[in-house]
Length: 314
Ligand SMILES: [Zn+2]
Image (cartoon, rainbow, N blue to C red):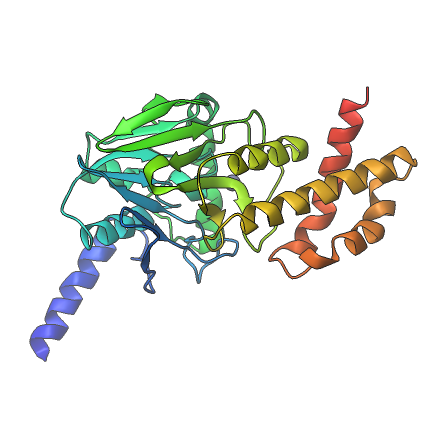
C-alpha cells in the first residue's frame, strides 16, 4: 500500500512540476463512428472549472500511413488526452492535423501533437493561419480565466500550411476533401469530408443542441456553408460541439440560423429596432428554446443579424 502511496505522490509532484494545468479529469470515450473514424465528444457547454475547457469534439482518422487528427481541443492537456485515446486504438504515428477554425477551444491542443510528432503537418484555412498567433494568445488568457488555470502551460502552436475549398488531400489510403464557403462561423472555417468513410467534420459551422457564438460570423454565409455540407457525399456528421449524428443536425442548425435571419429581416423591413423584435423572434424560435445557450445568445444573435442586414441594405 505504502508503495502505491509513494508512487502516487511522485506522480502528483511530476504533474505539478511540468508547469501545466491539472490532467484531465473524467473519462471521455473515443466513439467509433466507422472502422477508421473516432470522435471524443467534449462537454457541450461553455468552458469552466469543472469541464477544464474540454468542450469541443476532437476526431481522429486511421489511414494506412498514420493518424489524421481534427481539432485536438483547447489545451496541451486535452491534446495529450487525445494522444492517449489514439494510442489505445493504434500504434501508428500522427501524420497530420486539421484545424477547422481560429477559435482556441479547437486548436490549442496542437502543442501536444507537435511535441509528440514533430513531423505531423498542421493544416488550416489561410485566414485561420494568419489570425492564429494573435488569437491563440488571447484564447489562452480567456480559457485560463474561465477554467481557473486548466489550460496553464498551453502555448499556441499554429498551422504549418494552408488548405482551401475543393482541395482533396490524399493521406495514406484516405481522401480528405475540404469545403470553405467564405464567411460562415468565421472567415476561415474549413469542413473536412473523409470521403471513403462518408463522414464529415463540420467545425463550428454546426452546433448540435446548442446556440453558437456568431460574433465573428455571418448568418447568411453560415446557412450557405451548411447547405454546401448537405451536398457532400457524407451521411454522418461531427459538429464542432454536441453529439455527432446524421443530416438532422445540419437541418436543425440551418433552420435556426435561417429563421432567425429571415425574422430579423422581416421586422427590419417593418422599421422595428432589434430590442423591439426580440419577443416576437423568441416566439418564432420556440422549438429551439431548449438548446444550450438559447437565452444568453438570442439577443446578441438578433443584434448581429440586424447589423448584417442593415449593412447589406445600403
Ligand atoms: Zn468557434
